[in-house]
Image (cartoon, protein in one colour):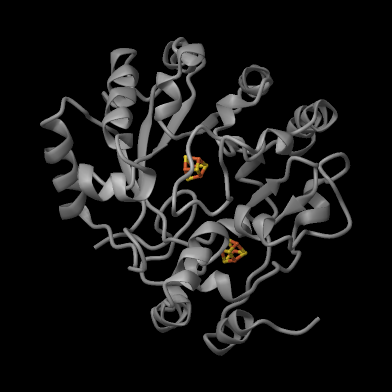
Length: 320
Ligand code: SF4
Ligand code: SF4
């Protein structure tokens, strides 16, 4: 196998990237169906992606795998994962095994009439909601997710708060996930989090945690970079900001990303780039078959090691 530029950079910094023994997150991508079509979307999701939904047979394999893999959490993503018709069954399966569940929620789905009961249902099942909200500012947020989306997102946050989310209740955790506007690096610190709290409080919104994700140069965001002639410069920005300290916390070390067809990946980004973990599927993977495996990397990985680092759980280096 030819070493990627990322791997060469890691080696130069005296770092190795391989999977750990314990599985922190079993991340299930239920398909690319979504009620939105955001410009920064790294999975190319949209309302016309119904054919990409995870089939029943793979859903059953994912449930069986919860026993075999014993992850510390089940992380449901998409698209809008709630739009998968067996979303609630997957949540129940994990919770009945006492496994914490994360729902990666776009907030606007909570306003769709057929999902009106969802906030209470999530609260009843003690699901952590990780909600994407690009920015506290209406203008910046709408630029990425479309006109009117900020207002709808805030309405979604009000509905979550009405059932106890974002109020400090450990069983109703609300995490907001931000990402930069365009080709800038993600930078979060306690001052910025305080600003978010103050600005959103003006609209009656509170939350437990704010995390950030760097925009990855893949899928729809890459198309935008190419169209605007910024791809090369952005890649250079990411590479120049390489931080060896960010490697240790990379999510690919302890996350297993499962595609709708049951194929396995080190992360959601590799899934979008069709860089699978060969040899197993969700039907037969075991913890032993994952431990110590080297991770498939490419130039997109510089998006995870730039600055404070970036992952589905936020920065991989503590904020200043
Ligand atoms: S970023 Fe999230 S909400 Fe937006 S289109 Fe992609 S999956 Fe849907
Ligand atoms: S893109 Fe995936 S494989 Fe590459 S560093 Fe990030 S999490 Fe790891």
